Image (spheres, rainbow, N blue to C red):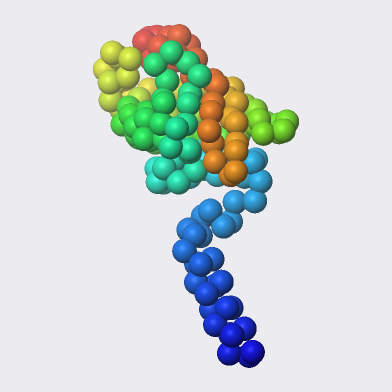
Length: 157
């Protein structure tokens, strides 16, 4: 019996080890969203998007991301125009499986964005986003950047 218990313990530990350390350490829906902004934007760990966005992730806006790969590509594209892009979470509210977040972004414009050549201007903007979380995965989102304001900041003298 001791031998069986020992083998069972090893199997359970081995299976637990199969799951990534990141997935084991996420504890709540708020953690999933908080870590998304910290990992993807502040640490440039884009793999987080692939690991914590559902494969059929859906961004509710025209021409928005329709898969986790699309979301990955959008974030990488933003990073190309704003390589020092960082984000600060100002407010985070949870209601059921929805997380609402108010954010402040800061970045320096280093490459073409919305047809505007690099200006080397440092700009800041606020955004609101909502995320639906199911089984520890981001499945949907609503929100957008204030592109009109950003364009004005980049083109003003």
